[in-house]
Length: 293
Ligand SMILES: Nc1ncnc2c1ncn2[C@@H]1O[C@H](COP(=O)(O)OP(=O)(O)OP(=O)(O)O)[C@@H](O)[C@H]1O
Ligand SMILES: [Mg+2]
Image (cartoon, rainbow, N blue to C red; front, side, top):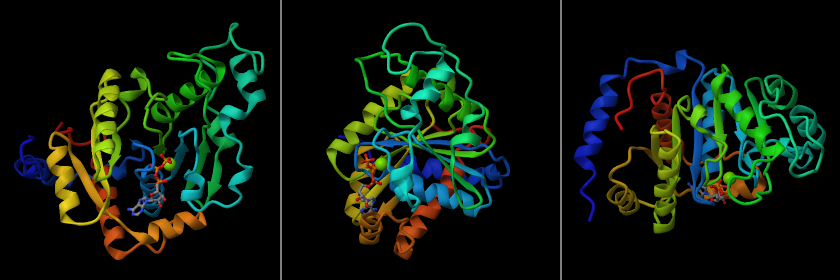
């Protein structure tokens, strides 16, 4: 049995209130990674945050780091079939890592040049949003090191450590693109959970993986919440985590997904919940108030 979350939550909100005059958005460098079990709503949340930060006047780099990429759809970008993920750009991977295309083993560069890639490869969506689609790397067992994965890892490191944008990364349940050197600069690992045991188990595993690389700024977002009972289920079962908000179950999100569009028509309640999450995410800046975790 886990203790009730309410005193803990109250303490955290106090802490948050105390720092409420701090405006992290004056800094333009928020780095957010979104993870969670398959189908839990990572892309939905990432797409909203990308749009929301752009509406706040920020330059946003959306990074689709899920091998089964669909953030472009979530953002409502058309002709997504034409997008070539970076891991599939064989010539680029070979050129930058000085490897032989398609070969396994052999020598290759561990520190390929990547700083020009955002400008060259990101897809524009409006004035402030750009999207980079990373693509998947075939795994050859644990600890696979291949030119594609080295290029992606270096690129993610560059985006997190060097870019002066808000970076939102839509990841899979694993967080393998993040390494120890990068994790210190991730302002927040957002783990999406839904009312259900499996999603909670995945969240616990993600927390362990994050701890392994020294990433402790973790917060949860509850999604597909059908009412108070669902909300309480999440709070009761994840009492040791910080929740940044709860997104209602909303048919409009599913409708938009079917059309490959951004959910412009989400209900007012959903929008309010997501905006609150956006504001709370801003407060997670590593340069801002200390994390209460
Ligand atoms: N709040 C919500 N209410 C209702 N449906 C939702 C909600 N959030 C997401 N969905 C639906 O759940 C499905 C999965 O959402 P989404 O693609 O965002 O999840 P994901 O975690 O990115 O999935 P994947 O692991 O496949 O990348 C989609 O059909 C989406 O429309
Ligand atoms: Mg997704």
